[in-house]
Image (cartoon, rainbow, N blue to C red; front, side, top):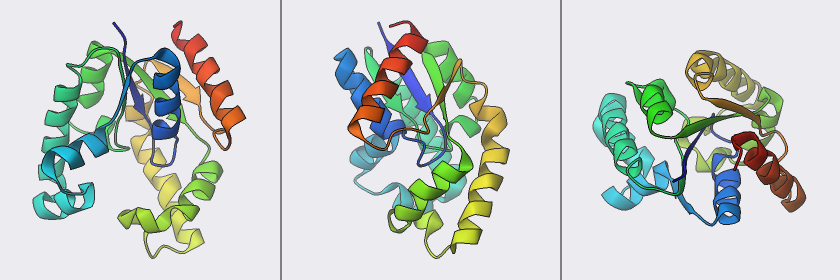
Length: 175
């Protein structure tokens, strides 16, 4: 039985690497944010606005516990998931946890392009975005570093890099 939780900041490549890794392993892939959106027929942003951060984080925790029941699965968590409640401990107890570590400059490059799809980033100028990323990483680092494995995910820009990263992750996890 395989259950892998991918954690890391937005833009780290949790979905990109997670999908490719699950395909290689011939197991299921679940993006926790997508799972929540399908269950509640609302975007994460809408749920966040309606329930507030505390309400959303409680819902997220419940959904994390639900998907952790699945077997033979790669689960991409939301960027903040490990930072609330006992989520990181729970994931460490129920599966293998991998922190996708990405340099702030790489995150900036990725998120700068995807700003419009991420409400929390909209309207931020480049300098503001850089500071925002660095501050968020500093705040979340103690949680992310509780993962059982740390994986550098700087290189996920093309098929070859993704395939190479999948192979490296497979070796790291001994699968």
